[in-house]
Image (cartoon, rainbow, N blue to C red; front, side, top):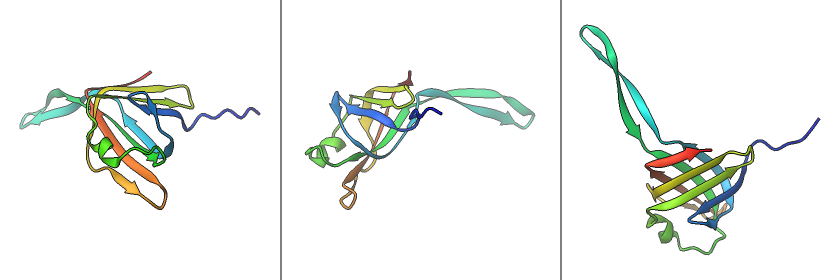
Length: 120
């Protein structure tokens, strides 16, 4: 029996600065989202609407970075290298929503969205 880690994160960076992941990391690649179109006569097809990519991460607050720095981030490159070998790369990303800090766990929750988040 081999023990190969398939879950977890090996690396997380914002504009080439590495951060320790202190909790979850979730992502949604940029896609075209389909919605069914219906009317009085039945199902009439579907529409395509672009959906921005999104990456949510909880990092460890050990970087010495002022929290307001994260809130001001826009047009950044976000990279996550997963233990299963996948790479998640977002370019032109911006930080959305509140920057949530948990002093007890020394973590910071961040959410980035943008037009181009892909999985390789």
